[in-house]
Amino acid sequence: MISLNLTPVEIEALLISIKVALWATVAEMPLALGAAWVIARHNFWGKDIFNAIIHLPLVLPPVVVGYVLLVTLGRNGLVGSFIFDTFGISLAFNWKGAAIAAGVMAFPLMVRAMRFALEAVDIRLENAALTLGAPRLKVFTTITLPLMLPGIVAGFVLAFARALGEFGATITFVSNIPGQTQTLPLALYTLIQAPDGEGGAMRLVVILLAVAFVALIASEIMSRTVQRRIKGGGQ
Image (tube, rainbow, N blue to C red; front, side, top):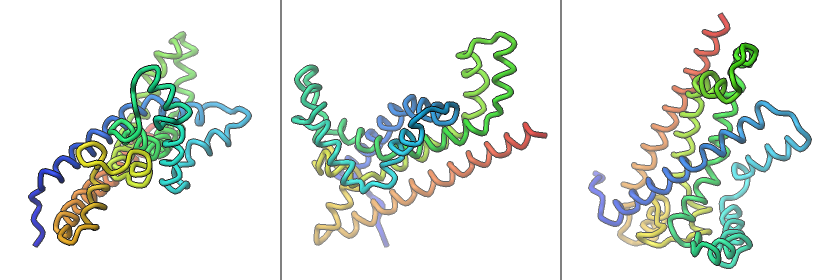
């Protein structure tokens, strides 16, 4: 029988994971929406390259992503040194860096969900509103955005679950520091290395499985909502 009573260390890891995942997904939503808009509604030279770059984290080993982040955003990195010298902000080896690593790994999932939802929106509705004199921004906020909202929610849920379960890029970029960067996957890794950590490891596995299961179910529900809306609009 597995006890689900979390220890203080496990609770701390859970809270850090939630904070990291929330910051990662909320902060990248505007960027994901912009990227989805560019891919879905524009044709330009290099579009395939742009699309491939966005989806690279899906096929690259997470350790590679973490190393690139460390080289780029670390204290002595190309961008990280400028940020630290100018603003006094260090991104490596703290929860901010963990949020960046999680966000980078989750970004393609959010973009894909938003892109598919945007491609499902009937562009004739937008053109009709533009023809009637509605400003483009108003058309986007009152027509396009509400129609693609299920896809946005689905993308957010999937990205949040992916960010919550991120391991490789996080441990490479910000290490495994209890109380600072030790998220649930990192705490699980620590527990399976300890001789008496089996109980705690199983508790964290149950939590991660539950979050992933709920996220997938929620994403599927949102996808079906989009499909029903499309079929309803086409009748």
